[in-house]
Image (cartoon, rainbow, N blue to C red; front, side, top):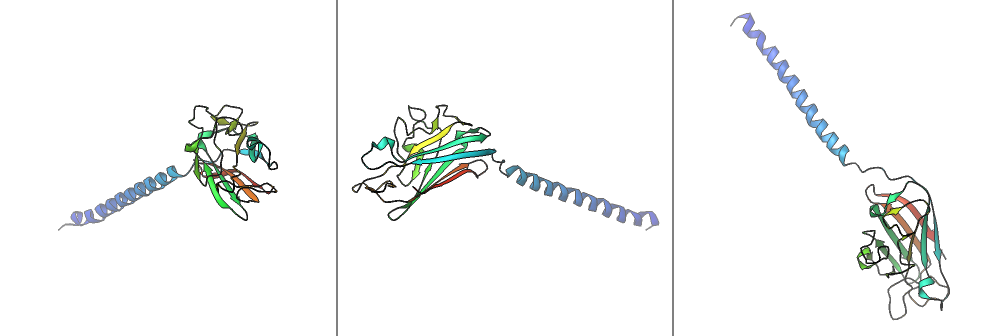
Amino acid sequence: MNQQDRAVTPVVSTIFMIAIVVVLAATVSVFFFGVAGDINEPAPNIADTTGEFTVTPPGETAGNNQIVRITHIAGESISINEVEIIVRASGPEVDAEARLVDLPTDSYFSTAVDSSNVQGYDMIDRGSSAPNQVIIPADSNTWMAGDTIQFRIKTGTTSTPEGADFRDDPVGPEADKLEVIIIHTPSNAIISENTFRP
């Protein structure tokens, strides 16, 4: 073998090393950018919300009792189909969770809560009229500043154990704490959280 033939080996090995580095770099970048592409989008900036839970004494009309209202005060508008609402009731006779999902509703009355929108414990009232409307005013597709998410917590009765009764003289399952958490589902971020102790 002459001197020129022996010099080929280091050149070929250098080319192979460069090729391996390029392939590894391409593989790592594909993996990294693939993972980066799966990172959830950031949550919308909901600067402020306010919550209200109205509890009236026994004997009042059911429709006026135990109404939850969460009002968007400031920040970005959010598509309601990107929202899920977790409702937790706890107390001496109840410890349960329900979810409002698949919003806006598919009912004939486009803003009303129906059975397809409620998962978990049966404590969120359904119906075709206020207060069982998810978004007030009735643009049911967007929750924007000035709009209120509204729904009613059923009190239940002694013969019907569903619900959570927050009144001073409870008839249904007695409860004393209500948590309402609104989640932006694409980012899985909490955009509003309220705890009520009537």
